[in-house]
Length: 359
Image 1 (cartoon, rainbow, N blue to C red):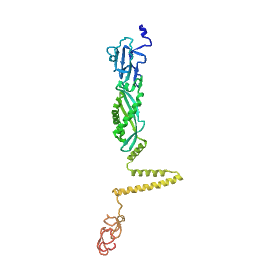
Image 2: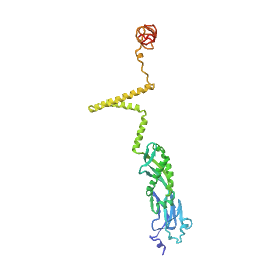
Image 3: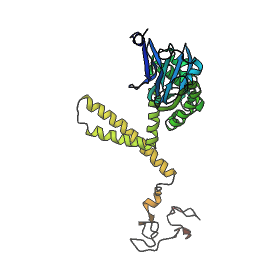
Image 4: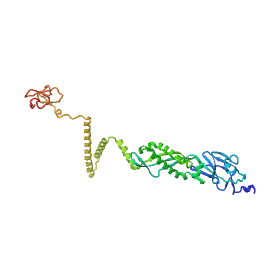
């Protein structure tokens, strides 16, 4: 048999073993294809962010980091396990070479398909939804092939994303419960939750030969009814004094009613609303005045005798309490004489303190 017979199409020999990745999601690529044999002296080229794993007779024989290697009997570690090639050019050895992509696969999405139950100190039991992104890399190529890829000739991220997402959601739910962060404080603790979840899940990912390099929480949302309650609570905090706010609303309503020029039933409804609002305003203003008097904020009304004035003991003209002389007759104001017993009577008194005579 001549050398041309050895080079027949049925026997193809591989001289260069390499993989140029033109995709963005390939994790493992198997080389060579069926019925191809590796030529003795062939060149193995492993690029950065790659690892080459030789599989012979169903068993992993060796792994090569980035670099250039010559497949022969002298300097290739794989040959110590497979045995030296004795047939020269026409080697009978058929081995499979798996190229594993060891770069980071970024911007992978995760999310909670169902709400996560959480016990909250403010709202009690609440249901939360969350989503974010994560990044992975193959840290142990041999373990990844054994546990995940198997004999798949072309393994991509979509083939493992389902399992990884379920693992991520489970770990995130556990980390969220352990953190005991109140629902109102979750937004300020996204980074802490992300770090805690990544640390918790990395051990699980290592069993697949993977490393969880990034885990980010983008958003955690509450149910609509809880968000509505939070909005009301925020509104009350912005309003502040509820009494003054009620007065302000009543004044606005009265202004709107006054500007309403529609007739018929609308006029009657407007009048009724106006009366109700007026009563509310009167009650609110009365309460405000009473509170002001009790707190000392408003001046007390003058007594009746002060409002009417003090009569002059000579002419009877009523003068202000602090007037020293009568505005009518000029008589000095002060104590008067009782017409009966001539005792001094305090200014403004209606009866004598000594004999009881009416002044």
